Length: 66
Image (tube, rainbow, N blue to C red):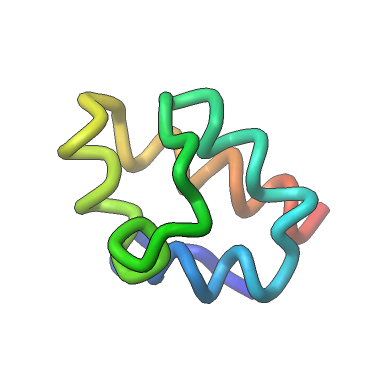
């Protein structure tokens, strides 16, 4: 899976939640099971949590794709 800023968080978690969840927890996003969190894009979540979307995308791609 290739993650972009437009990728929906629920899709990432469905693909490999075990590998991805720690990066969301790191930015303060602890409610990964709630419908609004699962339906947000990376860009939306980062805007709400005041973090850099490009950095999160890079970390997620490394974790999910080696």
